[in-house]
Length: 557
Image (cartoon, rainbow, N blue to C red; front, side):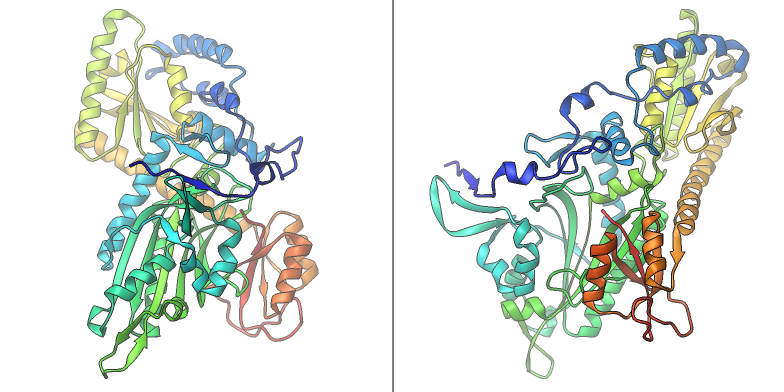
């Protein structure tokens, strides 16, 4: 029997048409209209194609100039909004043109296309290894959760109530109890922990699941905030509060290393304020990333849940002294939001710029020929180069299609953020060399001629360049971040920094009410109290009283 479940939700009109439209910004609650994506398959980036000559300058420059002129004419309307003109429109254009995602039939949902999903798979591959190295096992929990579970933890239900999707009908009948479509899994995890944990010998219990989550967001942005998204969520149970705190810190460290070493995003790691702490947690640790528009993105969190959920669900164990104790817990997660973070941190007016360690394609080979009798030799050489790189563990793509010009291919793969392009023409075949261009260095400066096809030379050169690009992206993002964080010592200075679109960093010991005032008056929130704190005495920027820590304020996604 097929069971049909329906959702009883607020009016779709009220959910998706509440936000106002702007003449300069796309509607925040919606993705761009479907037809705009269909008509913009890629950016014909003149400033890149002008430098994308054939592999050997004298032989193929003229032909490419002609081809690129045709390509530019054919695609003159297929442009991407400059980042400096409209960052949100630029972001949506990149997602459409780089073929990362498309619109789902329900407003606020998205279909992740193969190239976008491949980036998510690269994130999964890295984290899965780290989770298992730290003793965690993967498993899966149902996405339907009894509503009564959500109600058991007071702050949890209060925090998530506005975002819940609730199933009330199944199989054509009214359900005896409403079911919540998973917004997060702390409640159902605790229900199962209560059945699995009985003794201190059952602890610690360390699990992770890769799953989808539904949160009925009022304002959506693809990858960053959608009604449904993909994530991993770790859940652990411990015998002592010290073990739980150690676990929460360990996992935020895993996320921090991933951000720096794989995504080339220089996050600020720290503790959330009481107002920004996860609903039901004792402490929340976060990694905060600065996007290209200088807004903050909460890229990953790790929560010390204390005994809040174990007391609500009466999850107990018998300790070594024969006493019944409630377990201590953590939960931690990153999601497909990280894909959005990568786009907004590294992308430019030509499209994506992917860090090599996460790029689905690290090297694209574009063969170039002018005459039919040159084609076979060029393609054979290109295939050999592909095999050499593939055998060395490089993720390489040979674009040997003859339906598009070389200039079109250059623009297309630049849009998709491929770190390195290799060009091979007839003279390169004759000389046994290739031309290599870097995505992160546009124009002639990023192009090197005469790199030998000899396997050991070519492989070494390509791998060195991939490492250089990875480091260069991190260095550039770090410089951008540091130049846009302002140290402040008064509320007026904080307001000035925020009005300039920057992050404000200053001493803070004020009340929750003062924090709410900052949010109301500036639109900024405390992103975190960084783990790295300056030495010496500090005075709260708001109250003038002694402050033990500095906080970072910023507008955020």
